[in-house]
Image (cartoon, rainbow, N blue to C red; front, side, top):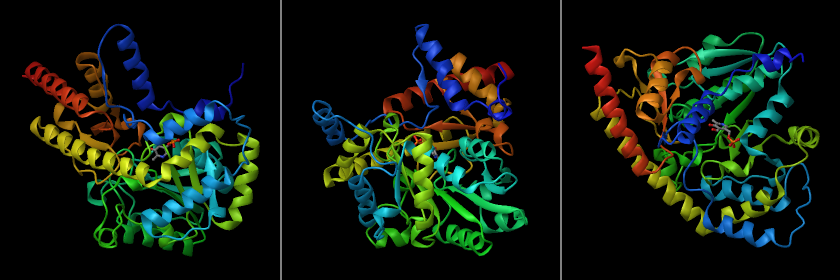
Length: 400
Ligand SMILES: Cc1ncc(COP(=O)(O)O)c(C=O)c1O
């Protein structure tokens, strides 16, 4: 069978590949500490699970409209009011099968072959695949610790070309958990808009990030959405992370009015609609009780972050930029004499700790960095750090 060049060009998502290898070790009877995937261990808020049970017995679960249940689109718009003080027309909310489908629909809607698109390096790997799948020339913009491994305006201006048609930014970022300061992000989006380019801003971790001073004084738990500064940006979000609902495959995009019918046509054709039971149960995400559960979990992530940063410092593994959100730490492993791939392979085989090599996220700093996800329990994190301590000791002893 002839496989398309497009499919052949797609590289594996290494975080998931390491998960597969971890599963093989587990099948052989080993206890693996999985710190490779960005998957909160809490699961959906209790009210959401209860709602799923309640509706399962007697609801037919037909397709919904391609843009999602009207009540859910309204509830999501209400969440912007409650979390960010932003009034949003629910008609602009498109419910999708995870943020992944929102990325798919938006790149399908916006990219023509030959368009150049700016993406930070390191960044979420699937973005590059979506873009090149639709023929874009992905221009990876190298970043480093000075810009918190994020795009800044100066880098965007340096890499801008006549063919640049758009940019993609996730803040906080996967793999570093670091954010673009709100004013910098607004300036980047202003620049892109002034040059006629689209902006896809992935806010999947926004509600899991530390509030900046202005948001905190306005009584908000998280930094502002880019929609406050740039209402024409295309914003991605999801139930996977803040609401802990990875496997439910539910997310959303907020898009400018003119894109709504385009997204509708694409969703109708690509997958009809997001899962009906997931959409119905997700309505229970937005009650005060469920939000309180999610905010308590966010505080727990803060404690896990402190535990991991302290543990890594104790074993001499350098974190160039401490995260301010999400649940990732981007660790510089160059002091170990191993590159990131070797480090992850050996940590998995010898210490049974699953991590993700920087190779997943780009090229410029990839070989020197490993991503650790602290979406796991404190007990697993403590055990994982103890195993890494012993692993590094053996490594250093062998190198003497
Ligand atoms: C930055 C970013 N965007 C999108 C996604 C996809 O999330 P979803 O589970 O909502 O499809 C992820 C998943 O890890 C992510 O890290």
